[in-house]
Amino acid sequence: MSFWVVLTVNSVTFGGLLFLLSAGFSLIFGLMRIPNLTHGSLFMLGAYFGATFIIGVLGVKLNFWLAAILATLVVAAFGALTERLLLRRLPGDQLAQVLVTLGLSFMAADFCLMVWGGDPLNVETPAGLGGFMRFGAAVFPNYRLAIIIIAMVVAVALWLLMDRTRLGAMIRAGVDDPDMARVVGIRVSQLFTIVFALGAGLAGFAGIIGGPILSVYPGLDQDMLPLALVVVILGGTGSLLGSFVGSIIVGFIYNFGQALLPELAYFVLFLPMLLVLIFRPQGLFGRQMS
Amino acid sequence: MSGRTLVLAAAFVVLVTVPFWMPGIYYINVSSQILFYAVFALGLNILVGYAGLVSLGHAGLFGITAYAIAYLLSSGLGHTTAILLALVISLASTAVFAALALRATGIGFIMITLALGQIIWGLAYRWISLTNGDNGINVRTRPAPFGYDLSEPAAFYYATLVIFLIAVAAVTIFVRSPFGAALKGTRDQARRMNALGYHVWAIRFWACLLSGLLTAIAGTLFVYYTQFISPQTTALTASAEVLLMVIAGGPATLLGPIVGAALVVVVKNVVSGYIERWNFLLGTIFVAIVILMPEGLVPGTARLWRVGWRALRRRRGVVVVAESAEPKP
Image (cartoon, rainbow over all chains, first blue to last red; front, side, top):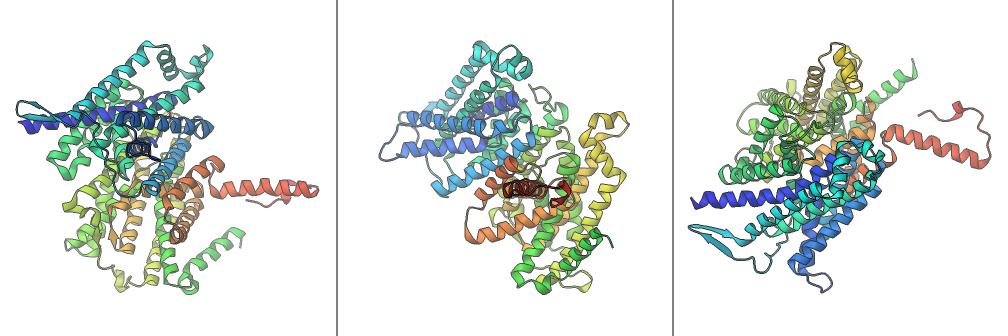
């Protein structure tokens, strides 16, 4: 019994991380139609930078949460720079955008290998969350519960941002009809940079928050990117709710798959994707992809 | 004889005599690599160039063939049966992949093929009882078709060359056929083709199968060349490398993928002798090509050359008499 409960908690935890990762991917794709293949790398960069800040740079050690915030800002800045310097030159040319972001992801992966080497880095669980919580026979690590709470808070904050603020209204207008949004005086170009930085920052934040349970290793980017893609194919692009539901589904399938069919864990991800593609190609909550 | 025939004949002579003038076995092997990667790139170019469908999962299909052959051989089958069965398995997988990926076009197609390719990679990596995981599978012997033993580098080179030439001929015929024209039509004007009564989906599906067949043939040559297969072969990096061959050489041309394959294989072999950072270089080339020469290296170099030539002439004060005086691309 407790096996199943623990597995369920782990699935929701992983789903929460995936939501942080894929919400940005989905927003960037929804607003800018840019398939950002650096998204896995942003996750990995966030994890590496966060881990480095915690271990200490030049004798300055940061506490976990400060390090996480700093890593988020670094990755968000990197995302904003990528958008301003490279992607901006290729408006509407999706093939070029795919190639540039793919090229960047290779450069980022090799950069991480060069700087941090091939050995995995362990990220210590933040102080005060190292313990366990008991519910009857089941035991939950506090940190996993904390991730679920963080993901919920971010989800609510994102929803408030998108649904209740002026910026959110402008982003939604940009997603629906960029030309018309421009006509009524919204600076869509500026929105692009903001959304890209926001998405990148979320991915970086997910990386460092996931550090204590996933650890940080070369290839983390290539492990996470397909998961984000599957989430977006499942949930549909440009929809927060879609990312949320897709993430939870993928979190469950991935964790249950790994526990029950360890050799086929990657393959069982294929099944929900297959069903969605057959019956609802635009995704559960999305509009037409192309 | 026209100039074109002359160039083709010269290229043919050069290719046939490679084992005689190449300075060593290493270079003959690099030549074999170029040829089977060229077959792979020709296969991908059918989708990227002529169908306008960019696939980032082709290394997965390539890997399926290679794994199938290695697995069937290690379970005791003969070469002919193993190759034929592997081709059938590859085509069946291609059909499934195509049916899934063709639910979308454009960016959706890219994302689905990428996810499918990663799933193949995940299987190769984790399904240890079938694929032997990271340790990979060895292929002990090369086949000997019609009693012609392929274990020598030169012999393998000739076998690869024959298959390469057949593939080039097949793609040439395909591109000039009504089917090729229809495929280009679906790339440029899918709706209009549909209105004209063409079954756009079916045309794209058959193009995927043709592309998958060429990929499978290249995968067969690959696994017999390296006599080893590991998950690395199916990784996203591998899909990106072959896409780079197509894009770099110039998509939707016959020569482009071949030039691209030669370029990538040579750079990779030469560069990896000096530095370890091949992936970084690969990424840099991608970004540089897209920003500087979006039309591909062959047409792009020609354009930059023209621009540079004109600027040089102007500086020297030479009056440019006629546009025809400049070098043709």
